[in-house]
Amino acid sequence: MSTPIHVLLIEDSEIDALMIVRELRRGGFEPAFERVETAEGLEAALQKQAWDLILADHKLPHFSDVEALKLVKEQGLDLPFIIVSGTIGEEAAVSAMKAGAYDYVLKDNLTRLTPAINRSLEEARVRRKRKEAEEALRESEERYRKVVENAHEAVFIIQDERIIFFNSKTGDLFGYRPEDPVPDLYFLDHTHPEDKPLVLERHHRRLRGEEIPDGYSFRVVDRQGNIKWVEVHSALIKWQGKPASLVFLNDISDRKQAEEKVIEGAEQLRRAMEGIVQAMAATVDVKDPYTAGHQRRVADLARNIALELGLDQGKCEGIHMAGMIHDIGKLSVPAEILSKPTQLSPIEINLIRVHPQAGYDILKGVEFPWPVAQMVLQHHERVNGSGYPNGLKGEVILPEAMILAVADVVEAIASYRPYRPALGIEKALEEIETNQGILYDPAVVGGCLRLFREKGYQLK
Image (cartoon, rainbow, N blue to C red):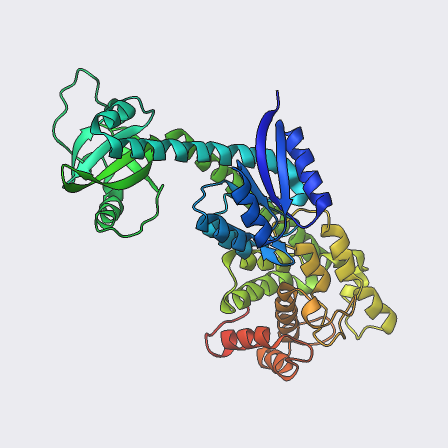
């Protein structure tokens, strides 16, 4: 049986909207939907009826997901909001999530849509349940007691740092059997020692009426010494005329263990990828022993330039990976040309110049988390369009490739080559400084110069 669902689509493409609806039907839903693409249309649709879910494109010609989120909040609605976009940058995605979006799904990977919807609907259900419990508390203390005693989570009230009421699930969580005498409890009694400062600080801030993140997690220790992870949600209430905190604790130990396994698996994959990249770099060194270590030195310098420019850690790691194998295309160049002790002929130079394209062809099918193949393809492009293999110009060149280009030139000039002795680092820095804005990106050159002249960086 299909699940009926009312879906509001914020989408300017009717074709994309129909694709999304088709995916919903494949996922077991029977959607009743309406498509809007402006703020006015969204406001009218929200007034017209109740919706179960909002699916929004990231950016429309006259509207955006963040603007839509703001409008929904202004209406006082708590609706699951998922971004479904053809493309969205990491920073934009983070901003949207901070603004209240539940998740984002790319249009070329709509198989993620149904699981994302199911999770968002479940969380909305949990939020509604919690809100209902809080409203019941305000209406009647007796009704509150009935609700919390039948809750599936630990519920208790804290006043003056002491637990003055708790349900049976709280006793279960802290390791007390129904027949055990329970002593007076303070809310830090079962908090893990390392987490006490965080819990205490947030508790006091909440009592002062400050805004604090809801739904954070910490560890508790039951009376048998078992450590458990819990997720806390709380609300400031009045109890017998004095401020108190109504606290909901969910045991998330199983989820934490699963998350740790995922993180461990991701780290293993990262190490495996790094090992493969190092093996590929070593293969190039075997082919071109006279420049052995060139790729590693370029990779290290490029990463340090990226850090100097303030790029995030992920991009810096991607640049380092690309630097480690930026010359992998030289595997297609005859070894006698790579090690020739004299100047190359025009024909030989042209053979050398195919290596960025050859490297791209080798790497384009590898699904790195970064555009490694494109960085390798573009690391000999120049700002004024005089580079190769495609003569790209200016902003068309990837910023990461501009960093690799500077690192590559500096290392190549400073180091020994079969056809000439090492020219030294000052000659290399003079080259990039003279040609900044012409061949090389000025910001990248500035970062590189600061590394060597102000921070004492040296090629390893």
